[in-house]
Image 1 (cartoon, one colour):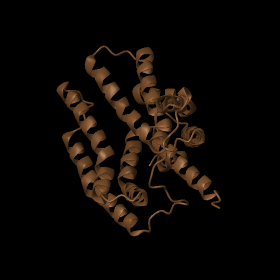
Image 2: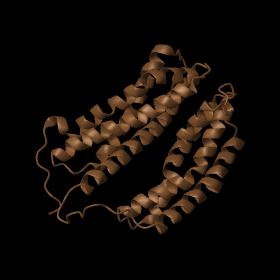
Image 3: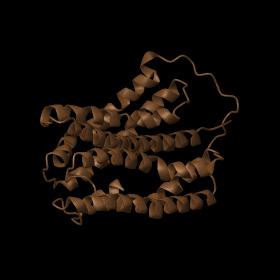
Image 4: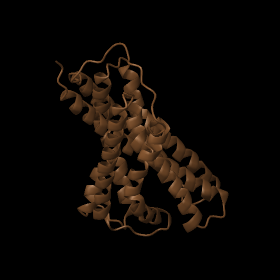
Amino acid sequence: MTLITMTFAVLGFLSPSNRGGLMTALLLLFVLMGLVAGYVSARMYKGFKGIDWKMNTLKTAFMFPGIVFFSFFVLNLFIWGERSTGAVPFTTLIILLLMWFGVSVPLVFLGSFLGYKRPAIEFPTKTNLIPRAVPPQPWYMSPLFAIFVGGILPFGAVFIELFFILSSIWLHQYYYVFGFLLLVLLILIITCAEITIVMCYFQLCSEDYHWWWRSFLTSGCSGLYLFMYSIVYMMTKMVMTRGVSVMLYVGYMLIASYAFFLLTGTVGFFACFTFVRIIYAAVKVE
C-alpha cells in the first residue's frame, strides 16, 4: 500500500493540496491489498506447518484493522464530545466498516484460500527434533540490547524527513516532495533489511538460533523511536493547552507508530528469512 501510494504521488496522480484524495487512495489500496495479505500469511503459515489456518486468516483480516479502527473510534468519541467540526461523521464510519467487512475481509479469505492451495515452502535443511542448548551469550548479544540498538538505524534513515511529515500533518503545511519521500522509503527498506541481517548473522555466529521474533523486533523497534520523537516534537514545536488535544495527538501518533512498527518489522523478518534460507542452502552436508 505504501509503495503504490508513493508511486502514484510521484507520478502526479495525487495532488498534495487535496489531502482527502491521498487518504482515500490509502484506504482503497489497503482494502484491495487484503488479497495479498491473505496469500502471504497463508503461504508462510503453511510453510511453518501451522494447523489452525482459520485463526491465522482471522488474525490477518481483523488484528491490525481492528486495533486501528477501535483506537480511531475511541478518539473520535472525544472529538464528538467537544462538538468539534473535525469529528468524523457517523456515516463515514459506517462506510469504513462496509469497506472493511465487505471488501477487505473477503479478499483476505480469498487470498488465504489461494495461498493454502499452493505447495508449502521448502526449506534447504531439516530441523533437528531435539533443540540444541544455546550457549551463554555476551551482554551485547542479549535480545533487549540488540533490539534497541538495531532500531536506531532505520529511524535515523527517516529522521529528517519525519520532521517535514509531522509539520505537514499537524501544522497544516503542504508537502510536495513525494519523489524524495519515495527515495527515503526505499532507503528505509534497505536499512531495515541490512541491520537485521547483520544482527542475525552475529546471533547465528553465537549459536543462538532463536532469530524469528528478534529479527522482527530489531527493525520494528524503530516504531518506538518514532513515537518518542513525536512526543519531543509535540513539546518543542506545538502549543497545546487542552487535554483532549494532547490525547488526540498521542493517540494518532500511537496508531502511526504501530503501523510503522509492523512495516519495518515485516521488512526485517523477510530479509532475515531470505538470508537464512540462502546461507543454509549453501551448506554442504557430507
